[in-house]
Length: 313
Ligand SMILES: NC(=O)c1ccc[n+]([C@@H]2O[C@H](COP(=O)([O-])OP(=O)(O)OC[C@H]3O[C@@H](n4cnc5c(N)ncnc54)[C@H](OP(=O)(O)O)[C@@H]3O)[C@@H](O)[C@H]2O)c1
Image: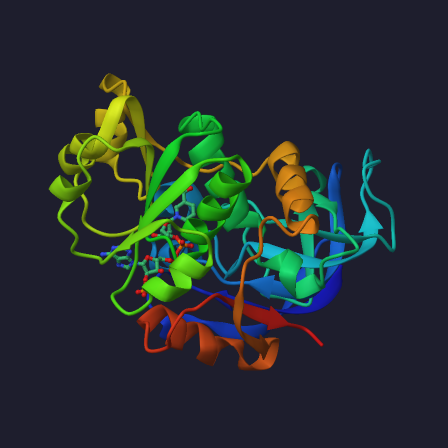
């Protein structure tokens, strides 16, 4: 056992339940690695899980750690691990069930940890896993993106939206997207061809797109359908049971529950190392100040403009 500090909670509920507390981490088991965390990144799913929205999947064992995405240095490897060795700089993700990346140390599934490209800082690498893998799977796997396609991204300046825009551009697609009024210059600077506000009229963009990725907002499936070209596909990442049920019977509508895989993480690492995918960092705080920053972010009193990074140094 090794004692670590981590942000955890003892029951599902609001941000006031987060505590930075000592935690006894078991040694890495078969197929696991122990990583000294240097940086971790916040995602909306961190507080959705803490709120209890996924308690059917995440169970009722407490305390539960918070956070998924991290980068750090391998301290120990468990039996059967050959992909990394002690001392390797890595980045990766905790599974939804395990969580706990907002910590000094994590015990992670070795399959969800890949070597950090030397071109990336620990902070830049920690920002990538959830948003990069989700964007990749939404566009390429579910959306079947091809070079020359026309893509619309609802929420083009969010974490997933920015990655999706960059991956689409990297693949030779043209990108349209929606964002907050007043932020369109930033989206255009990122290569988005045409930017519309949150409450745009879908009729104006009728029949234009091969792939629509919905990361945020109120665009309905029916409205999005009107924006598709023949044979186009809508991918929605805001999962609800009703949407999942509808997606089973619709050829043009997919709901994505992103799955971290070594292949997807490696692809994101390559794209980031090449400079094709860059996730901006809005704010960096230490683990000891992180609860305050996470609470602010969750309540949305701070402009986003990129990721909140939590460092242990
Ligand atoms: N299914 C999955 O596997 C999966 C994986 C990752 C994320 N998600 C979910 O996907 C969502 C997005 O994740 P994220 O990491 O990109 O979050 P994020 O970084 O918070 O980005 C959300 C973006 O949506 C924008 N937005 C808010 N209202 C909008 C509207 N009406 N129209 C268009 N854009 C709007 C926000 O703009 P402002 O900042 O200006 O308000 C922000 O840029 C979250 O709900 C997250 O839980 C799902």
